[in-house]
Length: 416
Image (cartoon, rainbow, N blue to C red; front, side, top):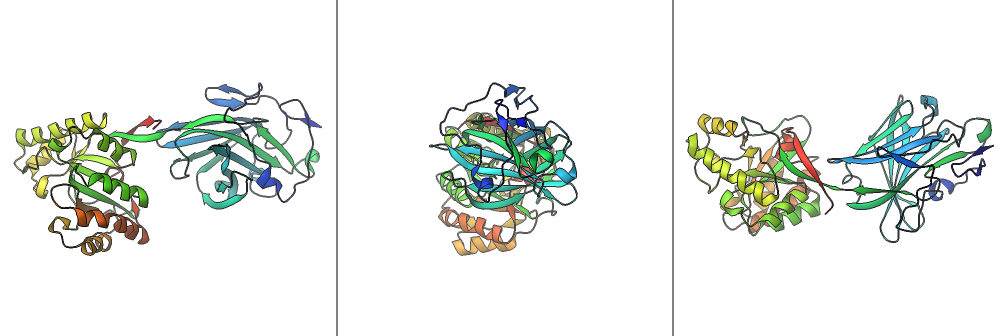
């Protein structure tokens, strides 16, 4: 007979239909209880004992966040072969995530076998009161090699809230003489481990150069852009983007940025990007020291107001460009960004026309031009939500211009 990590006998139990949904790692208090055997070493909670003889005897688990990616690593004491992978009759391997008040299981990630030795994850949204599955999606966010299962994901994609949560891992299997029915292991053996999810806020993108009118045509990705802000319309645009799950890039007028720290931080907190649109909307096509001054002053204003964001993109006002201007931008580590879809929203053609031009004109890699400040933007404001919905309905994924162009973005982790 095997023993669990608390030194108590572990008894093989017959699987019942409700066991998978209800025998989860659940705690009823905010404070996590960490057993003495489970110790954090370099961020990993370990169980050094061989308390459950079987292919999924748990050895350790860790939870960490790096920029926009959370990594949960699960270790077993022995290598797990393809024939012993979770998801089939041989066993299961699940991480349960809990948050809220009262604390209860909200999410469960179960590794499942897919194809030839490849793994995926069943992402289950749970009823925190009884652990029953409310919805399920299968995600390709898992890798497995030997004793190590690694789950990597964007917490926003999985709907995890920013702040404190609790987690535990449970394995079960039906292999070996001791487990004719079902054996299981838990880490921790009771209670949960605490963890924290941070908001990943863009801190800038790496220096770049050149000029583009669109992004790569591989993959159905498009970028919405707004010129001439920040303005009184900006917060409304952000609300529409947030409601529809969209993002955009805001090309800003430098002289309008000082004193707008709150809106700048709100833009970044929503996953959007900031970019440069000159100091006072002057024609920069002459290039030289004049263009350099206009761009550098604007970038400095954005950096100060946003709390450190380094802009690596600029858009020449009126689209007036030249090789001299591109050279000036190159010297500042900035790329010139034009567009291939023009809504002409500044002409006030009507909300329906703006929507139609943005949605129907888009192709893979498109950069869509709209406006934030500089005049009456009420028609554009009304069009933002329908444009996001329309682009998604056509199968497009909305990204920022830095993401569209594959530019390296740096992030800082925030608790707010």
